[in-house]
Amino acid sequence: MPAGQVQVKERPITCSSREEFIADIQLTTPNTSVQLPTNGGLIPNDRFLYGMRFQIELRITNNAGPNNPTGTTADAPYSIIDNLRIEGYHRIRQQRERFVDARLSDLRELNRIYSSNSPYSSVPSTGLNLAANATNDIRFIVDLPFTPQNLSIHQQIGYLLDAPNYDQLQLTLAYADDRSVFTGGTAGVISAFGSSTGTPRVRVSGLFALAGPNKFTGYEPARTWRWFQEVRSGDIITGNTNSRLFNNVPKGYRLRAGLFKTGTISATSSSGNNVYATLNPNILTNLRFMQGINRPLRYYTDFFALGAESQNWYSIAPTAGYGLLDFAPRGHLWEALDTSSLIAGASGDTDLFVQTDIAGAAAQSALILYEEIRGRPKRH
Image (cartoon, rainbow, N blue to C red; front, side):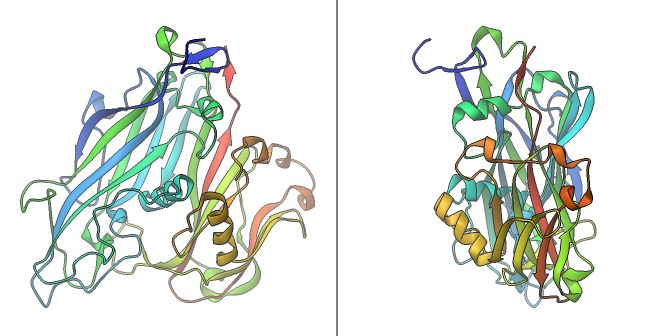
């Protein structure tokens, strides 16, 4: 085998993630969904993909006093893109799959933890400028790997996105507005980065995997799904002990991890957008991931214990209000939680849920972003 190649399933990999620019998405109208301008809005499907990279660029000019903003949201500025979805029809499995459906701010935090590095952002450590008539040039980059993160490349090759096997493989971004970034005052003017005119943009690049002339012929990777559940009513508001906060954890596949997030929801964001006004690590205590009755698979006294575990594994502490429960922290997917046997049987054995004590308060919310592994790599 030539030097530098990785042998997986008898398929030589010549490059696992070569970056190539795809296209710019112009963010012309706030509070709309946008797609790639090329190929009818479809993601290129001529090669396998390791992941995608998104570089968001814009300027927000504050209104004159006294209508200038008074603060920023907890998710700012990453919440300018409210949601990111990727979906398509897989011809071999004969089903439509929405395998990424998450908020960009949460995907960024997940990538931040797993990469042990804060992704690039032009926002200074002092935060955005709130002064009247101030201009805020905002540029940040978020990577979206399609493979489970922080694994050896030998394992990751089994979870590449087999784009050639998809029809209508689409990326959809929900573009919000400045009310998802700033609080108080009135809406500022959004324009192109570094300019008082023009439109913001998202620069989209693909991280393509190459496998020589065979192009992965006959190889079907497994699929990593990232999607979330959120609770905004009930015990998260009123408070409780031993609350079944997330009562329907997904079963039937393998669960790699869950990224928790707690805080308060913004009351001033525009209709249809979802952004946290504050993040708070003190809302949940005695956090248990339960299988069946009185059987905790994981038990953390609070978010600080959960955060310390992530810091030990990945040398970076989660942002306050986030916590990562990783079932395979040593980089071996065989440690992932296999829930395939939990879809039938006595409820005392198959029940899967998150139980916690909750300090209730108005407008609170809790979210869990799942990283779920569906299927196994296979050759045809």
